[in-house]
Image (tube, rainbow, N blue to C red; front, side, top):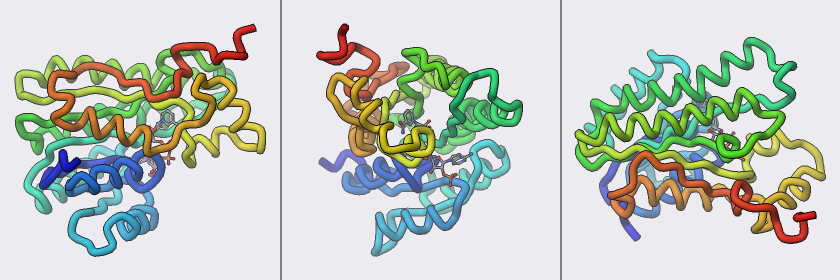
Length: 255
Ligand SMILES: NC(=O)c1ccc[n+]([C@@H]2O[C@H](COP(=O)([O-])OP(=O)(O)OC[C@H]3O[C@@H](n4cnc5c(N)ncnc54)[C@H](OP(=O)(O)O)[C@@H]3O)[C@@H](O)[C@H]2O)c1
């Protein structure tokens, strides 16, 4: 499939995990990809791994919580490619633990990156987006099912999906679609940092009807679908990619 031939896609948080897997998928389908994130060395390593020949990957160090970084990012994209066809607003942070132990700084950081960062990524990318463009926002399964250690994170991701709904309505007249994706337990650096120890994977996989953590490629496939013309009549939706975690209790765990 080459659904993204000559199309330009911005991926925030594109150097690792789900963002990196999505970049690989979109490159395979013909896209030009812009990777943004805070750590230049991770961005450069990702670009080398993805596009050894050069030419179809650009990297821009940027913190989505900093409006001036986003302005610089959009100027760079305009200079490089002249515009954008799709954006995966994927950058996010999580701090997990009982809500009473969340520091004021952690609460601010979660909201600054996950909510304000996604809001501003969409608003600031808009002038570069043409008719037929698509935004995909990275939310989380925790917006659908309470998780005791994730009060602020889950609330931020509920806001992300709500932004997808409102932006979907606001941008439909411009021919632009906006959806969110809600990954379940996906094996990435964020998952491993939040779930240390040898027992975490088995514990979490046991909650998933399909019986395993998800792979970043499995989310990337859903993002590519939502960003492509295959999803031309889909907007304002949340696509849950979680092996059934939100929908059902696994067979054998029902008692
Ligand atoms: N893994 C899961 O189980 C899971 C489940 C549900 C939702 N998600 C969501 O999936 C998204 C990607 O996470 P992941 O699991 O792939 O973990 P990850 O590999 O840690 O990816 C997070 C990415 O976001 C970037 N980032 C963080 N803060 C940023 C900021 N302020 N500005 C720009 N980039 C920033 C990070 O790069 P820098 O640190 O270099 O900036 C990193 O590349 C997140 O929004 C997360 O909430 C993950």
